[in-house]
Length: 97
Image (cartoon, rainbow, N blue to C red; front, side):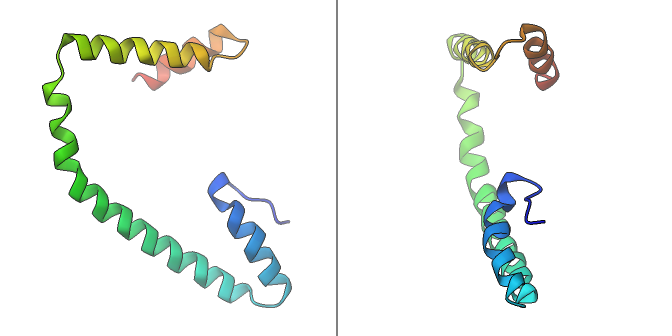
């Protein structure tokens, strides 16, 4: 079918489909799995290393910074709203927890 299930699978569909047509589907799946494992491992270790320094930044926030982040969030939601304000407000409410 050559239709990706998600945006991240687009390149796999482009390259993997051509390899599968040549009878190399196993190699295509192996390359995708190994690449995914390596990338996931690197990102996990990078997140662990960066978590503590990044967690210190919001501890320095005051009232002005929180207000600015709130205004930025509202502006972004309204800017991406599209035509339906009701759907926008509903999605903003669900995303806010």
